[in-house]
Structures are given as structure tokens and as C-alpha cells.
Length: 154
Image 1 (cartoon, rainbow, N blue to C red):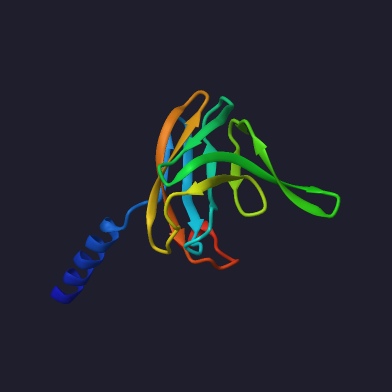
Image 2 (cartoon, rainbow, N blue to C red):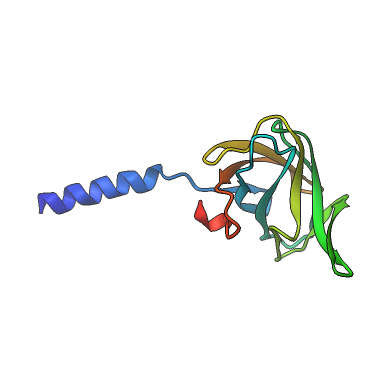
């Protein structure tokens, strides 16, 4: 009986220490911000996450900033003929009751002029600015450079 109580207490302690990787501002939830590790000489990287709008009003992501790069921009990947091309976006709509995914080969935050390499295991701040909900700082987790990387590995 004592062993079971001790085991339950230890398990509860460790479960309570694990940080959530979700952030909220207004009715918006930003889930699992992540980026891929890159070679030390890479001039640019990208950040990915999911935004869920739990509210009844549309919103827009209108800006991004990070001290990790010279600039951060909203991009999407589009197919033009047989070529995939990145395209700059001024803003991205976040529909009421909807979800917008930022993922490889889709919407993403382009990190231009990296000041330091993106290293597996590190974290860095990224500020998202929404038209209605305002600003929120999230923490981006850098994971391995694997092609199959997904936000659920965090």
C-alpha cells in the first residue's frame, strides 16, 4: 500500500512538472510551436504551429517578430505549374470556430537572417500579433531535422 502511494505521488509530481506547449491570447490558442534544427551556416529557417480560434469572431495574424532572426515574415507555399514557390503574405485569416495550420509546404513563419543556428533541443521566443486579440509571445521548440518532424514530438 505504501509503495502504491509513493508511486502515485512521484507520478503526480512528474506530471505536474511537464510544461504545456500551448499558448493563449483572447479566444485564440496557439499549439506546439516548433522549428527544425539547421546547419550552422543556414541563413534562414521556419517556424510552425497551429492556431485554433475558439471564439465567435474572425481574427487575423498580422505580424511576427523574434530576436532569433533579422526578420520574420508570414509565408505560404504555392504551386505554380510544376514548381513549388514561397509567397509572402501580409496577414493570415483565422476564422471563428476554425483552425489554421502552419506546417512544411504550407503556411509558415519565415525566419530570415538567422542570428544564431537553430539547434536541436533549444527554445526561442516568437511574438505573434493578431488584429483583434493582440500580441502573444510563444516559445518555439527546435527539433531534429527529420523530414517527418511534427509538432506532436514535443
